[in-house]
Image 1: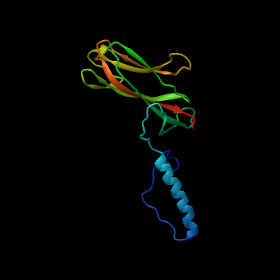
Image 2: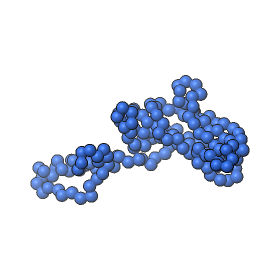
Image 3: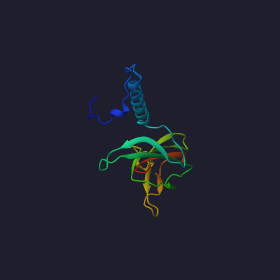
Image 4: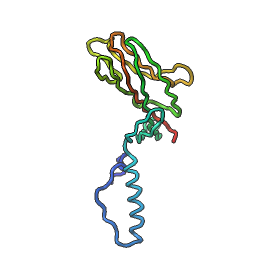
Amino acid sequence: MNENIFNQSAFLRTQTSFPTDIDELVPQLDKNWVDLANAINNRIISLFATNKSVITGETWYIFQNKKQSGLRRVYTFGAIAAGGTLNIPINITSFDQFSRMWGTVVTDVIDWRPLPYMDPITLTDGIGIKVTPVGLPAVNSIQIVVGATSPNIVKGLVVLEWLSQVF
């Protein structure tokens, strides 16, 4: 296999030929076990939890070529009136950089909208999302901002994913 391919550990061969000699078989089985574990662990993990950080399974190499792992947390919220703003405390530790901020809301006209949402015709119908400092430490609140002519928000959820060097 080409040594220049960065993600070769996520690729698992579909065929192998095992030796018949026990002294050759044992190291081959050990190697195959490590290959299998690496291939299984190198994928995005589909767990989402509120009030708990979850390992995403993502590995990032973007800052000085150092390994950073992804963490995820889900935040749910209730009603927000048109023109209103909601701050949701996030309590994230071991934070370095966000990789994703996304979510959905249900409005009182009974439609579902992504976060962030931008209406291409009426800009004041938009719904924004940002993470902002409300105090110290610097990263501690999700801010949902609802446009003045937007329908009222009935409920919603936000998913934050961030990079960490801890764990």
